[in-house]
Amino acid sequence: MIRPTITVIIIYYNNILYFPKAYKSVKNQTKAPHEIIIICDETNIKAFQFIKNITKGDKRTIVIQNKK
Image (cartoon, rainbow, N blue to C red):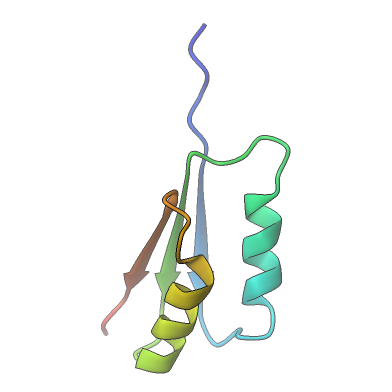
């Protein structure tokens, strides 16, 4: 039996207070996702670096910066 792949997409926009809790919640699900895609919808490089620091070391996580 083939198990379905689970992908979670998180859109980050100006939510520095809530992002760490949301990310941790996704990682700790009973059925852990195969990949986590985070789209940083801010042009602020500090926000992008903040996300990269929190997610570093998790090979399932892909961080994309939306450069408007």
